[in-house]
Amino acid sequence: MVTPGQVVAAKQSFYQDRRDTATPEGMARLLAKISRGEALGPERTAQLLDIMLRCETGAMRLKGLLPPEVAVRHKTGSLGIGVANDVGIIDLPDGAGRVVVAVFVKESTRDVAAQELAIAQIARAAYDYFLFNK
Image (cartoon, rainbow, N blue to C red):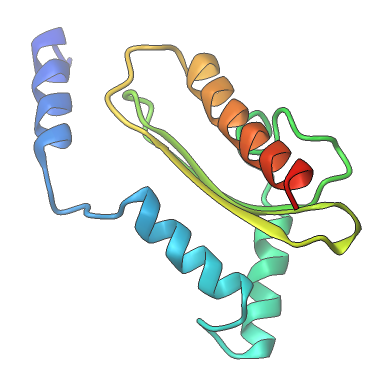
């Protein structure tokens, strides 16, 4: 049986491990390249964007506060120890462009619902900013 002390030690070890060097900025740059068709060939770009559009996880994250008709191509990530992520490409209405959003939550003491709400609020703020300032 795992003791509470072992759980705390495992979390500390995970949070201090710097081998996972992905950052929201780096992920946003990658998504922007994918969105512009600069990371892969046209066929693979279309395939990847379609896979991301059909993502079924994280309904309350990037998509959570956006209008239901808004296309969101995204990929979630979770660890259940204060880590909840979602990164994606959000379409603006009427072909007005796309917005790339990358949100990483780490070392949170809040429950999963609160983490997901924070991600949804960030996505909605970015969407509204670019929708009303185009």
